[in-house]
Each structure stands twice: as C-alpha cells, then as structure tokens.
Length: 271
Image (cartoon, rainbow, N blue to C red; front, side, top):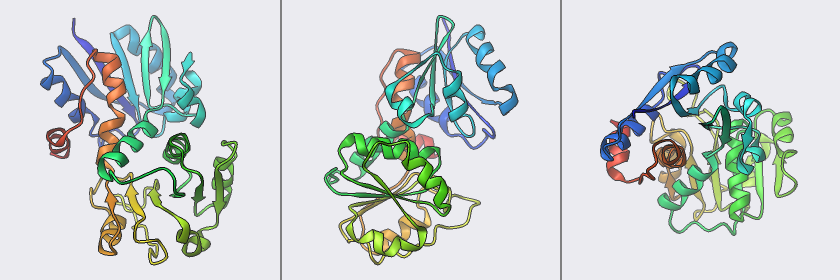
C-alpha cells in the first residue's frame, strides 16, 4: 500500500522537505509519496480533518501553522508541550498526535557540526519566535546552565522567557556587546540573513573566540552571520543539518524506517 505524507505551510514553495523525504523514499525503496500542500490559516482545521481520510499517515508543519496545530491535536508530546508548538503530526485512528522535533534537530546538528560542543557553558539566543522556543527548550534539556534571550522587541522576549521555569534571562538588544562576553554558543533563530531579508548586523568582537556560532537559516547556507563569525575565528555550524535531523522522527513514524543523515543527503537536499 502506498504511504502518503507531506508538509503544510503558507507559503510552501520554498520548502526543501519534499526533496529531503523523497531522497529517503528512493534510498529505502519505499512505496510512498511526500507532497507539499499550500494551506491557508482559515483552511487548517478542515485540512487536518481531511488528510487522514485521504490516506495520509502524517505531515510536517511549517510557518505559520506550528502553534495552531498544537491546539488542534488530540495527543501532544512533552517536548511539544514545552514550547506550545508542533512541527510533526501523525494520524492514528482518527486522532492527531503532535510532536516538535525542531529542538531535537537543532541539538543533533550542533553535535554533528561542532563535535567539541559541550552543554556546560551559557548560550545566547537571538530571536523570540516559534523556532527560538524549540531551541531554548532543547538547550536547557541538554544541560546548558543559562540561556540569555535577546530580541529587538523586548516584550516578546519576556513573554517567551516566561514559558520556562528557570534558566532563561532576557537582555536588551542594545546590551548585546556586554552580554556576549560569557557565552559559549550564539544561536540566530531570526529570519535576518535569510535570502530576501536584511542581514543580521551585530558586532561579534565581544564573543569569546572559542564560542560556537550557529544559524538556523539555511538559505543561503553561508549566512552573513556565519561568514562574519568564521572570519573572526569562531567555529560555525550552518542550519542545513537542523532541517535534515528534525525530519528523522517523522519519517520513521510514517514510513516505518529510521533514515540516516549523511553527506549524500545534504548534497541531494541542497541540489
């Protein structure tokens, strides 16, 4: 029987998930299809009701639906509950099971790209959107002692920090130079630096040279932040691996095979 899965979003044309899952389907000889679906917010509830009836085993969820699908799910994992958002849905006997694998993908990518990284030093996270939620939860779960959250709009950062019991403090954007001095990791979760967006303009001179700089943006792979950090002598990790690793749990649930992330997959996804 052909297995169906896909990804929903608005917009959806930019998604590389079909190429990613398609590569795994061919690699493992699975009779299945993974399709992109453009779903408007007003159509979300009806779409989630219809897809299981059409034979879909599950879907990935991208902007702007991650928080809305969380509220529509029947069963939610602890890591999805921790951030109030979901990116991976599995349909089982008429019920929607929701998970958030963004944090899992982030940590797996960080450990792949920077094998020397340890969770015993503080981390600085830029941005206070849905992606920051998953990253912060994953860092705290990994054992990072302190996460400092900085966002251009202070109120959004304060609201996000309130979701966590402890381990997260908020600093003003203007305080970034002073905040950097004690960090072992800097993470950009904003869209700044993405193709078509303004660059992320920050001064890294106060960041310890041993601190790792990573960007969850992967279009382009080498964002201006990563180029700047590498030139300053920092270890860097791009965002492609996060995309690859976060897809593993969903593929395993829907298609019954746990796939591997390797250089061939990375090349296939980047095209």
